[in-house]
Image (cartoon, rainbow, N blue to C red; front, side, top):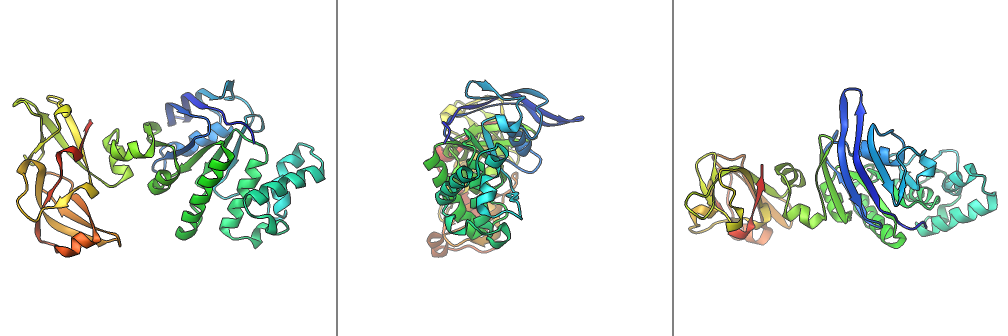
Length: 359
């Protein structure tokens, strides 16, 4: 396999007429990293991937792979390979010839290209299906053949366009594990587009959250989850309660004032006098207080929904002055002291579990 190289996007922009799909983004993907571009539909992640691949022309900016500027090179000369969402296998070719196709286009002798194709089919554990046509394969098997075909050119960067979206949930988890294993074994850079937060968190070394053609935050998954850089990231990643507030530091220790008038204590390093902020509190770090809770670290509301999720039970409360509050409780804890819909309840948290986000 080719040696992994750093991928760098510099002020990369894509316009479709008056519409700016990708708005001057800057990103560095370290060599050998697994990077996931994550965001809602229309955020610019697929346009970004297609510009890296050379299937879309950049309107402005540069794409660097190692020391080479590949912005204007044709796809075959970029040192990248793309695995499409549909897998795009040729229906009339068996697995070996599908994998070997790009070498055939380069004029590589039949015996040599088929031998190389068989090596890659063995890598993805598909050698026993070598003579089958794509229609004789399951979705997961087609994905493995598509991966082998992408790898046969020895790319420095493999680009994956929502490769798991067509699979059923059980197979998606299994193939997710295999993608990570292959990436680790091959040591090359993967750039993977997805709209699934769970998929990005499970796979990536670097998660890039996008919206409206811009990068909201690029960081390791644990940092994204524990320290979201914006209210959008906290809401999109999920698992957080996001509360709009104003900071009042007039009395010394900073206090967050919610729209409904509630005053919540903040860590001392959160002092941003007069600032509009958002507070992010993880649902699994909050509790339903069975006894008295400090008024500056709790909110009162009415239970509006309860969802049993197996290991956890999510309790949603309607809290005045907020968009609501969700508490994720371990199953055993919830059923030891259950609540019911319509019941008044108090939600509380520890001071260190408030993350303050500047608006």
